[in-house]
Image 1 (cartoon, helix red, strand yellow):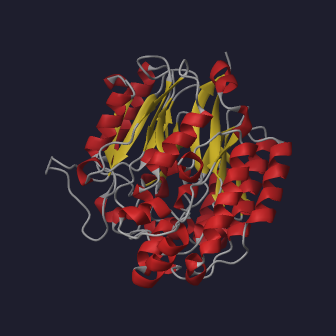
Image 2 (tube, rainbow, N blue to C red):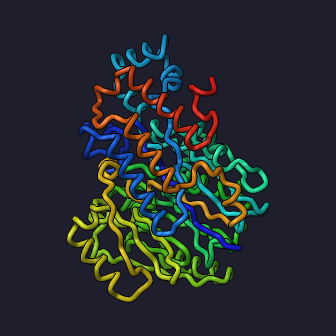
Image 3 (cartoon, rainbow, N blue to C red):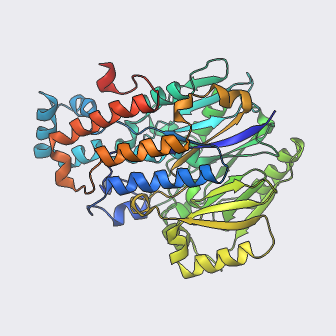
Length: 448
């Protein structure tokens, strides 16, 4: 039976703005309060989805959240009609309103952790929505995320869904941004790689001094238990605290894996040699041959990696066994990174081709190609059980671009977030979107 790694990309929401909400994310903070273009952001993301589909890769789409989140504002003490809640928040606590308008759910690498059926004890694909409790504006996402994923992967014979972990610091979970999987073939048993920034209970693990470590070891271990993963199919590794302090807030900013390969920066991890040996040994027991591609700091500094998002790329397998790297335009704009990539692809190694995409609207808010996609390995039977409305096709691409043109603004500033009309625009758009994607009622305004 054939198997695939399907990329489900986040559709950028109508309230895309540069709120500068993510402490530790250099791009997010440096572009705070600039004017954004939600329409351009959504179209840039859709263009990448269409391009990968046309290259022959399985591609899906994941719907955005309802924003502003009026329900969250009500829980914080604002009252009255929806318009009055927004008006009060804008007048009394504008930073809270900005946080409740964030379109950060577009970075669906943080939506959940996914384990394929070949790895799990019950032979189903398992999803655990990430609690994202390190940042308030993201911590409010997981209830809707769970409903959307449940509508996309509804067949309980093939799919199992778990609620987010307890929303406390000890179980900080950032989803697939700190998780990847190595395997010989997507449908075969593999080794799941969980990367954490700190331990909540074990003081032996060093912590960063400047920026927070968002993922805990304990959260990763809990997800592995929930998914029924065996010990010989799991490897845990700690991020280098020094690179977290340089803006590497998730592992997918400093490393990316696919198939049997890990593409990583020399300074990405602690105890790198031990980690590589463990990955190699465990993958060998699953019939695979681990391949490590290390980018030396002498060629690409951590600063260049963070600014270009070299590692926040998509590493995709070609039919001939080689790999394709999908990178943001910022990599081409950085002379040192671009020179490295030219040398890499001409060396005759595993990565033979680089394709560049303009994702400026997302990049300025701190998310590149890898942030925008959630990877789900599926066999043919499981793929057939996925809600067909969310699988990208040429007609769906056309429908979604028309939908964006109809509903999205081409300019968004902080003052625009205080406009009650924006909420109506968002709800109108999302109500239509759920019909396009055949999701049913997944948003609070559709349920309540």
